[in-house]
Length: 102
Image (cartoon, rainbow, N blue to C red):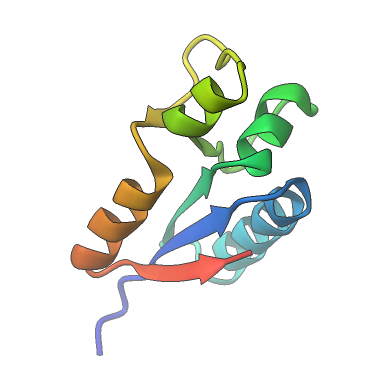
C-alpha cells in the first residue's frame, strides 16, 4: 500500500464547502504530506465566491465554470477553475485519487 495520499473533496453545497474545508485542514494536520483538492460546484461554487475569503493555509476551492456561468456569477481574479466539476472528479479518480463528498 502506498503512503501517498491524494484526496479530492467534492463540495456541491454551502454546507458541504464548510465541511470540505474542515476535512482538508484535519487531513493535512494528520498527514502533512497529503495532497488535497476541494472542487466546488452548484451552490458550493456560489458559497466559495460570495462567502468569506480563504484564510492563509486553507485549501482554496477549485470552482466549476459551468456552475459559475449557470448561476450568472463571476469567479474572483485568479481563482482556480475547471470546465466541469464532474469531469475534474472523473479525471482525478482515473488518476488514482480518493474521492469524498463533503
